[in-house]
Length: 270
Ligand SMILES: C[S@@+](CC[C@H](N)C(=O)[O-])C[C@H]1O[C@@H](n2cnc3c(N)ncnc32)[C@H](O)[C@@H]1O
Image (cartoon, rainbow, N blue to C red):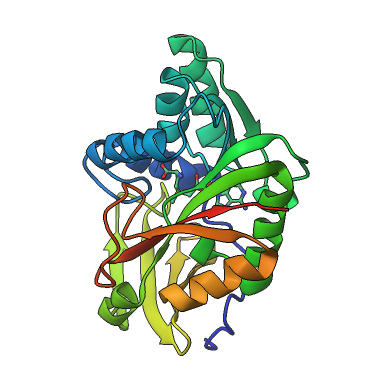
C-alpha cells in the first residue's frame, strides 16, 4: 500500500458514512469523553468565555460551523444568541433539529458543506471549534476562511482552535490491527481493522484505517495539520483577518505556548 501524499483523500468519507456517523453521534453525546466533542464541562466553560468576549447584545447572530449535534448551538441559543448551525453529517443535523424542536429553541440548522458556504454580511460571530480547521487541506483552509470572511459583517469575529506543535511532538507513528468479531466503531459486521499513524514533515499527520469485512475493504484517511502560533497567524492574516487575541484554548485560558491547542479570536475589518 503506497504512502499517501499529504491530504490525499481515500474513497470513504469519515464524518458522513451512515454507520460511522451513528458511532460519532454517540461520541458527541457522551459528556465525559473527548472523541468527537469536548467534555460538557469544558463546553460550558467555553460558552461562558464566548459570552464574555462577544456578548449576545452586540454579537447577536452566530454561525456555528461544524456544529455536530448542536452542543454549542443549543447553549448559545439558551443565553440569547440567534444561532445558525451548519454540518455535513446528516445524522448529527437530524438529531440537532429534533432536539431544538423538543426543547423549543429557535435555531436554524443547515445540512451543508461549509466549503460551499455562500453567505454575505450576515453574522456577528463565527465559531469553528474542536480543531476542524487543521483537518482540511491547505487550499480548503483558505477557501473556508474566505467563506467565513464573506459571511461576517464588518467588525464580525471568528473564534477557532487548532492543534499545536506540542501535540504534534507527542503524536507517535505506529501500526496496529484488531479483530472485531461482533462489529465495532468502523462496521456493524465482523471486521479486521489495520491502522497506521504516519508523521510527515511540516507538522502533518495521517491516521489511516483499513477496514476489511467479508465482502469489502475500505480505507479511511484522517489528516491533520498542526500549527505554530506563527503559521496560524500567517494563514488567517493572508485572508485579511485582524488578530484580536490568542489563547491556549476556546475556554480563554491564557496563551502559554505549551498547550495541546491554540485558539485565535480574529476580526473582519474592511
Ligand atoms: C470534531 S467535530 C466538532 C463538533 C462541534 N464543533 C463540537 O465541538 O462539538 C467536527 C464536526 O464538523 C463537521 N464537518 C467536518 N467537515 C465539514 C464540512 N466540510 N462541512 C460541514 N461540516 C463539517 C463534522 O461532521 C463534525 O460534526
